[in-house]
Image (cartoon, rainbow, N blue to C red; front, side, top):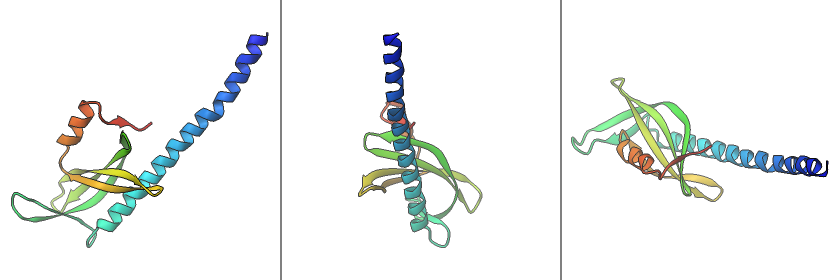
Length: 131
């Protein structure tokens, strides 16, 4: 009976830890999604994100369509993704790499329509999905 009471007490004490960990991840997700939205808003010029095609020298306009819910983690860095659409209706993915700064997160690198490096990091096990 004593063992059963000890197990019940231990289970009760573990619940707040699990809830706290979940709340921490929820707060991280919210903060990252807000940082992504701020970054998107700040980079818009006449409603579009501009990108120079280095092969042709042409400036391309992409319009935000949708943010992906999945967040990837790589040590202290996080990766969030969203879809953009060109004037011609072509969809491309943009990957935003975030670093922590003063209680929020800042974009340190952006990859538009360049998934190969991200996929290589995922395949190597360097990126994990934030739970």
